[in-house]
Image (cartoon, rainbow, N blue to C red; front, side, top):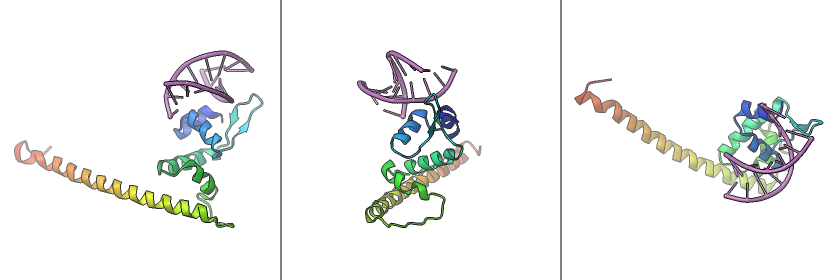
Length: 125
DNA sequence: ATTCTAACA
DNA sequence: TGTTAGCA
């Protein structure tokens, strides 16, 4: 498929798909006319990239761990620097999870308050 | 119509 | 990221 279809199927703007390519995250083949040709399996790959990006992980690190995603993680050369970066990213991720949970709880309480508010005056909805 | 590269905001 | 320009 070409970039337009991949963009539709992944929800990622074609502008970003070209950017991922610049960052070495995906490597589509080229047609004779120079158009990028993406294999079907790249759909999942792009979705994984998006997930990582949405988790706040920089493309530079994604490039290193992407090949392991969803597969048996077999590391032959344990890179201490990469390990340190992943440790840092995991910490940041934990912080964001905590932040989201706090807001999730806040919404839960607010919604509960909304559901109870009308009962006394206007009756249940 | 769709994609391509490059570049600017 | 969005958008624009000039091609193919």
